[in-house]
Amino acid sequence: MDEAQRLVELIPRLRRYARALVGDRASADDLVQDTLERAWTKLHLYRQGTDLRAWLFTVMHNVHVNRVRAARISEPLGDEMPELAQRGTQADALLVRDLDRAIARLPADQRAVLLLVTLEEMSYDEVARTLGIPIGTVMSRLSRAREKLRAMMLGQAPAAKLKVVR
Image (cartoon, rainbow, N blue to C red):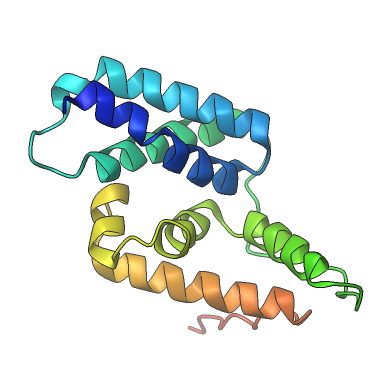
């Protein structure tokens, strides 16, 4: 099977990750299209025998990061986490909605690691290679993302940061 056919077979996984990454369907489809366009023009850079899925997720991550950087015009966001509304007792659908919103509020680097590990079931090593970061960074970002999600889902304020005293 050639790379073009394998690219087509991976589109559903790319769409799922893109949807989780950007939130809405239209933006996710745009991200997948830009990713496939970039992958197609850079296919000569793909090394035979390596994981095509990981390579495509790397391309998608880079396209997404470039978009976020280009869209960032105003001041950078602080480390403050917005509070979520208290979860109602209606149904589990509300819990899923709150979780989706909480994931969207995570910093982009933590959200990417969390989604690749949980949604795409990638190993820490695969995530490290995909994002081009050390495996220790993957583990720390995943830990911080899980802790922030836990705090947001429980309606707790973020833990106080330690100050450096001289």
